[in-house]
Length: 158
Ligand SMILES: [Fe+2]
Ligand SMILES: [Fe+2]
Image 1 (cartoon, rainbow, N blue to C red):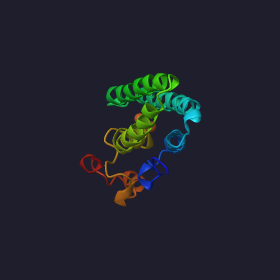
Image 2 (cartoon, rainbow, N blue to C red):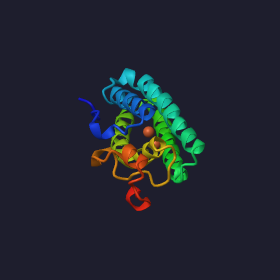
Image 3 (cartoon, rainbow, N blue to C red):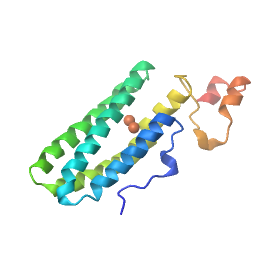
Image 4 (cartoon, protein in one colour):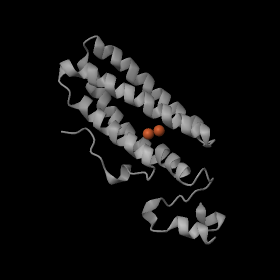
């Protein structure tokens, strides 16, 4: 059984981030269902992905001066510290802690995708516009068209 199923709510509308997050979910599920002898190599593959995934988001935040980048990069760093610590324990034969980690990271990702990554994707989509529409894609507005027609006031853009 998957630890985490891909869900439409993970689609943030930013192509690179969405592709990266699909890979993240696949590799995390592979850790979750790994037999003991496969746990370390799968955890290593997940760690390698996660270092690149977070590194890419951190770099993009720096490029566009994303305002809450400090908070977002700190969260990435804390998660990586935990994964690296657990990786060492799995290497020492504690497989159970590896499985607990995979479950905890799945829970963490649901939160992180819904908050920090959603904000970042929105910021990147709007070309770094402060106050890009906070309604998200689900609100039914054609934001691009409205913005072009100048119909959105600063207030409406939220
Ligand atoms: Fe992410
Ligand atoms: Fe992130």
